[in-house]
Amino acid sequence: MSEHSDIGNDGFLHLDKSLLFITQTFCMKLMTKELREKIPPLYSQEKVKDPVVHAKYFTPDSSWTWYAMEFDGKDTFFGYVDGIYPELGYFSLSELESVKGSLGLKVERDLYWKPKPLSEVRKEVMARRRRK
Image: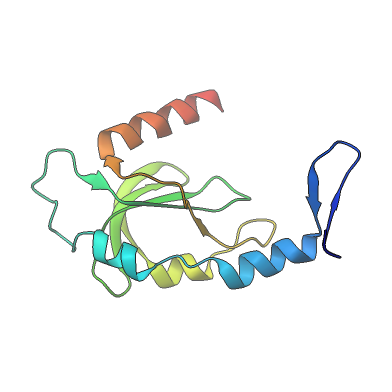
């Protein structure tokens, strides 16, 4: 164990909050070279009946989620945003990098996200909203 972690009486590893802050602040890359190459360019899926969502970004301390379908290779995404209400629209990488949730946590990329059709994402979002 390090000075920033400990195994509690419950048997779980507990991390010091400062370690979480350091990990979040310095380690999360919202856009990697590999992902940049995988997300299709802007407007390339506009005639596709059920476009593919290639990446998911979220605020861990609020309910906002951004689903990226297209990217201009620099800063602008087109995708599905689940915020106050779900909608299709544009958002920017620089915006995602600057946003913080109610507890001050930055936007994260879902590292386990597997590309899927927009129709599936919409169903999942609507099901989650009905449970609230």
